[in-house]
Length: 336
Ligand code: KG4
Ligand code: ZN
Image 1 (cartoon, protein in one colour):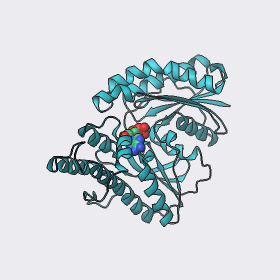
Image 2: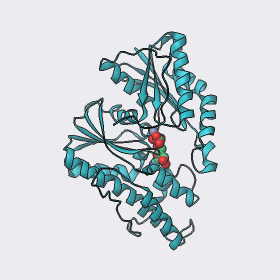
Image 3: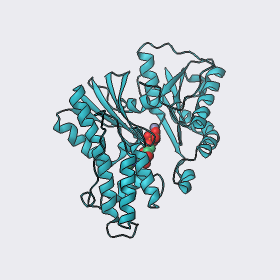
Image 4: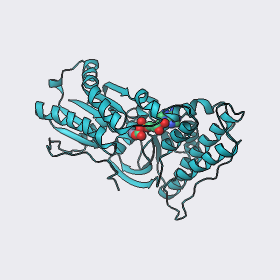
């Protein structure tokens, strides 16, 4: 059986062909970074327009690499939400059109659940219960997974996402877009202890995150110390800010581990590409004697292989796919 997954929730147009044994036959990702870079962030209308231009080519290329024809696809899968509504509608309409034309079922998938599934692409033997830390440009949350498809949201950001905070500070310092990978690269030369940032705390002891306070503190330090690219402490500042973001992430995971006593830990989402976060997350898990799972960098940022994988898992769990012509996209969280 062949599954074609499509992902267009934000600024990556992606298509992937997978077998029902989770073998990835292709995973084509076309990034729009160059289009949004001059604006320092994703411009929703430009994103939708670029998806509509690229989607046909990207799907075609995914089939070419898988050496298959459209008529050989058995099931379609597509990201339904959350994400930018105009972007989601491009992928959803395209997938619906294909399913309708070829009279094949279409499985809608949740973008956040798909990110968590990316950890299973290269590891099938993750023990449950597992705690998954999902850190991206749009979301920062912790899920408790009692089983592979049983998601319980136990913490989420109340304001900015971690990736968004990194991107905004990079934009303020005129470093380019997306800022996360740029800070990742530059900060390795800096001293993370040079600037102290307070750890954000929830007064209600919840496992929620907040990154807007950290971002405001960073902006204040930039102004007070006149930090620019030419400042002697520039790299130290970036390393200190990155460390503060990582500490906030791991501190909440630490509380979550104490509360839920998982058997394994998952790190996923675009920010999971960050080298220091990967290292610290690995050390944190090791200290707790828990196994940790992090997808390879190519599966951390938005990609359609994770969409196809979630669809295959749903099929295996007995979900009966069908083509619902009234299927719609949703911009926000639906998980609880
Ligand atoms: O998962 P993703 O592709 O899209 C969303 O669903 O949001 O994540 C994109 C985010 C951006 O904020 C980007 O700056 C961040 O992931 N990112 C990184 C790195 N690579 C991407 N952040 C830190 N270090 C990186 N190496
Ligand atoms: Zn994403």
